[in-house]
Each structure stands twice: as structure tokens, then as C-alpha cells.
Image (cartoon, rainbow, N blue to C red; front, side, top):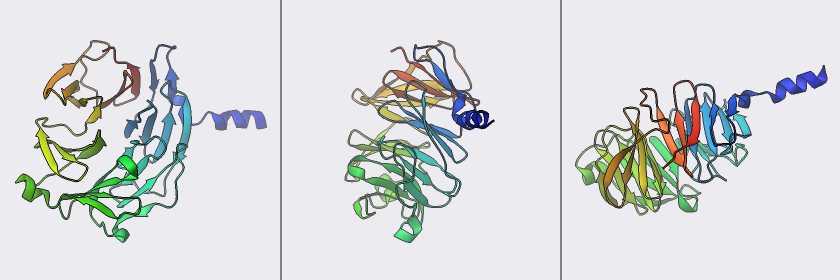
Length: 268
């Protein structure tokens, strides 16, 4: 009886990952609220406040239920050793380790002088970016939450009031997504560089000189050197109206559908 109980405990929520042979195809077979990947190809999934970590081949590596944290609005795995979670509703963030365990207590941003942070992401040297909705500014802070860069009011710099939905740092740049105006690019000192003409998207991913995004259930990539964009066919060659988001890592495509997440070779 004890042995049977142990088997049932071991068959936790991670059993939904189903490798499909050894050709790089596998899936997480239930609906998700969000996901991300890291530079190693590991997959981080969010369902409610349950976080799960899978290897690039579908092996389940870790699970954590952070029910006391507040609704998680962002997982950022810029660093695979120190992923960040952020709760916009609660105005708090926390750093995890590679087992999804908390590294110290959550940080309440309002108590640290940042009362209206609506976006947060990680960057190089352990720096963290905030978008402050009250001051309409991007802030870059160190691990003690001391500012090291501040754009100043973006409405004065851009001549419009930004309403960003996502941001990430990559290759020495910060990419701030404003669906109505495009992808706004800044350097690490907070200086505005340019606007990429990608309208109507909610999230992007920058990898190896390309900016990837899903629009109208189709996959696109924007060449950050040539400033050109092109559609990229899905691996099965079939159009679909159900792709919610996608990411690219090491030639693999992580495709989020309403009822599951599918991992497969991209084939480019």
C-alpha cells in the first residue's frame, strides 16, 4: 500500500509531458497560462501559480506551487540559474534557483520606492528592468534595487504615451513592445535607439539576430541587421488559428496552443 501511495505521489502534474520518440517532438498536454524558455532550451510553464521546469527533451526537472506569491504575470528565464517571477497585481517579484525554489523572500516593490511597476524583466549582470507606469519611464536597477539607468518620461521622448505589454533584454538592447506603436529599442543606459515597425503584437523574442513573434496565429521573424521581416512556415506546413505564442531555442519551436504546448524541430 505504501508503495502504491508513493507511485501516486510521484505521478504529479509533470506527467503531462509526453515525449514522442527521440526526434525532438514532445508536448505538455494541458492548458497553460504562460511559458518561457532559457538559453539552454529548458521550458518553464505556468498554470495558475504552479511552475514546472522541463529539459529541452521533455524530462520533468522541477515543480513549485507559489500560491502565497500572488498571481504571476511574468516568468523571465534570462538566466537559467536565476529565473525571475513578477506579480503585477501584487507589485512584487522574486528570484528562483534552478529548482524553482525561492531565493530569499519576495520583494514588495511599493515598499522599495516603486509603487506602480507594471512590467519587469532580467538583464545582464543581475540587473532588473522596470516599467514605471506612474512616471512613464524605464528603470534599470542593480541587485539592491538601486537605479543605474533611467530613461526619463517616455511620452516626452517619443511624443506619445506608451502602453507596453512586454519587454526583454537581449544582445545589449532592451525591447519594449507597444502594440499600437511597434517595438521600442533602448540601449542599456536607457537611451532610445529606434522603433521597429511591428504593430499589433503582444510579445516578442530576440535570438541570434532575429526578432520572432506570432501575429494572427502565424510565425514571423524580423532581421535586426537587414531590417526586413518574413513569415516562417509552421513545421507541419499547415496554417492554424490556434497558436497563442511561440519561442525558438536551438532550432526547436515551442508552440503554445489553447489546450497544450508542443515542442518540435523548426526545420530552418
